[in-house]
Length: 464
Image: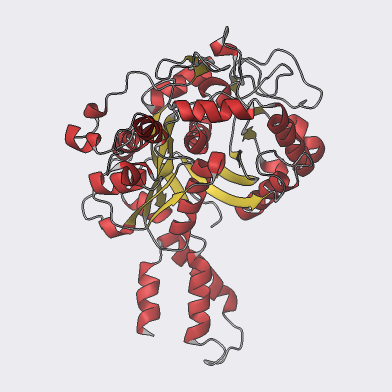
């Protein structure tokens, strides 16, 4: 029984309390030692370990709106747009000349210059946002084992800017840098975060297109739930400031061409929407196992209640118009969280501002929520920051935590003309005060990748 005793001592206080409750329920029953063997107790411990509670204790953000969480939040609730004419790319030959660029970012303010030179921009953004998140969570913590702190990030593309440079060098007959591949592959952001901050635990990178950031947060929570880490640094990062990216998305005809009105270009769910807006940025969260956070007196923003990921299995790029995969992801996330549609107070939408995706997401919400879909406020963060691809879902998770903390739902800006196919409450143009306890956040990516996260208010006496 020595191994079982060791496992019992490792269980968080709230999980031990749950175990005592299970044992109290068994009291008085006639159980032989064989019936309640070490193996059966081990099975029970495994079940309990999968139910560790996971909370958000730190956040960092860099977007086209601002270089920190607080300024981003203020801009969002004021309904300001970070979209403007492109300056980092020569867009003169393309129908789209607008985007969401991070402004005023100096890597030297966040990391040694020597280290910054070894990174592509998406990695620099991740290291910088992690600095804010760790400081917000008041790390380092004395005595914290770095092997129990993991890193799990999302990135759809990785170092696309470096690919742009390599292509130009090839065309010009110049050599490609020997560091090109090791600097641009998507997992390099996670490597640099681990390297800079000395984090040696679980490590992974999610590359599921537009769903990568949210899926990274969901998978990081699962790592903690199964007992493989006490703390996870997670989120998503992207820098799409490359001509090859603009050329590719322009060829797909997926981008807005509202060049004469950059701030009005991203208009999710509006009848006159004409495509999404490419953006760069990063969102990072510190997730902790609940008892670990409580023992050190951490500030808890919110709790990760549930998560799911599914596939449309429908089309390479287009969403399933029947919204079966997205609806399934929403339904499974709610089931994982142990809540029903009637418990959801707000939906942070994927809301890309494309004709097909916004209609599909609206249909998915209706499939799961039925008539109650019309009572739930829905808003799109992308209406103000554009689409940060792998960074989008992570930033939107930060928004969910701040919505719970401040009791304010940010608006969907540029909503002017209702669309019959998109007829929900999209919190048009002006922020709304509301008591919010449970939030559903959606991310739907290329290849029919669906990911949903349920974020809730932390309740000390909540169910495991």
